[in-house]
Amino acid sequence: MESALSRSFVSMIRLFAAFLLLGSWLVSADALAQVGPSSPGRPMAPGNAADKVELLPGADSLVGMTVPGQVVRKIYNNVRFRQKGVLMFCDLAIQNATTNVIEAYGHVKIVQGDTITVQGDTMFYYGNVRQANMRGHVVMRDRKMTLTTAQLDYDMLSGIAHYPTPGRIVDKENILTSREGYYDTRSKLFTFRQNVRLVNPKGTLTADSLLYNSLTRMAIFQGPTRITNKDGVLTAIEGQYNTTTGVSNFQRRATVETPKYRLTGDSLYYDNVTELGIAKGNVIMVAKDRQAVILGDHVRYNGKAGISRVTGHPVAKSLANETTKDTLFLRADTLFSFDNKVTNTRRLLGQKNVFLYKSDLQSKCDSLIYDTADSTIYFYKKPIVWSQNKYQMEADSMRAVMKNNRIHTMFLKTKSFVISLDTLNNYNQIKGRTITAFFVTKAVSNTITGGDLPLSTTTASGSAPRSVSAVATKLPLRRVLTPKGGAPASTTVLNQEQTVLDRVLVEGNGQSLYYAVDEKNKLIGLNHVESSRMNIEFIDNKVGKIRFYGHPDSQLIPPKELTPDVQQLDGFRWRDAEKPTKNQVLWLEKPPAEQPVIRKPLKNKSTIKPLAQKLVQKTIN
Image (cartoon, rainbow, N blue to C red; front, side, top):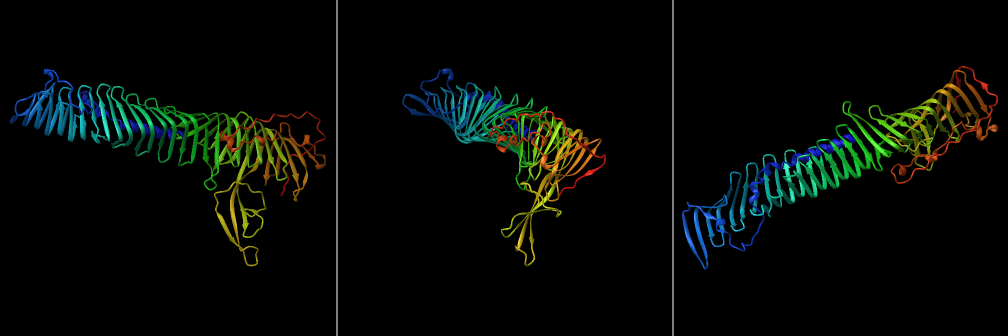
C-alpha cells in the first residue's frame, strides 16, 4: 500500500513540475526589465535633455497647442517616438515637451529591441520616470508567450511590470490566468495573485497566489493550492518547488489523492532526483481499494530502494470483513514497507513493541513481518498470539499462514506452548520443541424465532450445538418458515463463520495436559501425556482424537486428586490480561507489562502407566 501511495505522490510532483513551464515566458525577463507598476502621478521634476522623448519624422501633421508656460503639440498619423532605444507608435499623440509626457491614442505600440512588443488602445507615457500606462485591449508579446489584459503599467526605472486587472498568459503548452500580476526584473520574481489558474495538457493548477523566481528557479505558493491531472489531485495551503533541483515542499496539511490512494500530512517533501519523499505531522496514508490505512507522525520514502518507514505512533489498519467491518490494527515503534518491483509484492515489517488487534485475534511480539506474496506473518522474539478468546500460543518464533484474513496454520518453533480454554473453563495445554496448529473456519447458524425463545445454535451441516463466536460472517441472513402448529410463524437464521482449532502436531519433547469428559460433559480426569511426537485433534474446542508416536508415557489423574500443581505444565502462564485492546493498539492506552514466568519446583512423578504404541482414540461429544 505504501509504495503505491508513494508512487502517486511522485506522479503528482512530476505533474507539478510540468505545470511550472514558466521558463517559456521567463526567457523574456531581461526585456521586461524596462516596464513596471502603475504610477498615476506626473513627474515631480523635469528630466534631463538627454532623457527627452524624441519625435521622429514621418507624421502627417503637427499642430501646436496654446498652454501657458508649456510647449504642447498634437501629432497626427504615423506618429513615432523614441527614448533610450524604446520605440513608440500611435495614430494620435499629444506631447508636452515641457513635462516630457505623452498621451497616445489609436493602434498604440511599444517595441523593445527584437524581443518585446506591447499594443493597446491608449497610453500615458511619463518620460521623466520612464513609465508607460497602457489601457484598453492590451497585448504584450515576446518570442514565446502572449499576455492579454485591460491594463498594463510599466516602470522602466524600477524594472517592475504590473497588470492590476485580470490577465491571461498563453505559451505553446500553458494558459495562465490571474486577477493580478507583477514581474520584478531585478529580483527576477513573478507574482500572480487571486484566482490563479494554470492549464496545460497534463493537468490544471489553481492557487490563491503564485510566486516564481527565475534566478533561483523557485516557485512559491501562498494560499489554497490545487493540482489536478488524470492520475489524481494534490492540495496544499503553502508550498515551494525548485524547478532546477526537483525538490518540492508543501506545508499546512497537504494531500495527494488518486482514485485508489490518499496521502495527507502537515507537510510533504519530495526530491524528484533522488526519489526521496518525507511526510510529517499526522500522516495518513489510505489505500481505498484495499480499505487499508497507515497512520504516523513521520513517513520517509526512498523510491529508488522501494523502502518506506513510518515512525511516531505508527498504526496500520486494514478492513478484514466487509459485512461486519471487522478491522485488523497493527502498531509498532517503527513500521517499514519493502517493495519488490519484480514480483509487484511487498513486505510489511513492524519493529519493536509490536501489538496486533482484531476482534478474534490479538498478538504482541518484539518484531513482525507480513509478506503479501504468500499471506504469511512472521513473529519474532517472545511472540504470543491469542485467538477467539480461547487459544493462547507462545514460542521463540512463530509463523502464521493466513487465508481470507483468518488464521489457517500456525508454526511454533522452540519452547512452543499452546493453551486451549474449553467450555468448562479448563486449560488444555500442549508444549514441545515445535508445534504446528491447524485451524478451520466453519459456518455456524444462529436461529432467532419470532417469539421470546432463546437463541439456538446449529452448525451449517446440522451437527451438534456448539458455541458461537462474536465474529460475524460474509454469509447472508436466511428466513425459515415453520409449519402450522409450530411455535413461531417465522425464524431468522443468521449464518456466521468461526475459526476454531482443528488439529495440533507436536514434534520433539511433547507434553500434553488435557481434561477428559464423558458424553454428558462431565469431567473424567486429567490426562498428562509425554511423547516425542503427538497428533491431537479437537472437536468443539475439546480434545477428541489423539495419536502418540514413539514410547509415550501417560497418567490419568482422577478429579478428586487434582491439585493446582498437577493442573499446569512447567512454564504455564495464562496471559489473558496482557492481550492488547483496540485502544492500546491505537496508542490511546498504555499496554500492561508482561507477567513474570513462574517455574514449578521439581517433584518426583507418581507411577505412570505406559500407553501401547498404537492409536489411542477418545471421542468426546
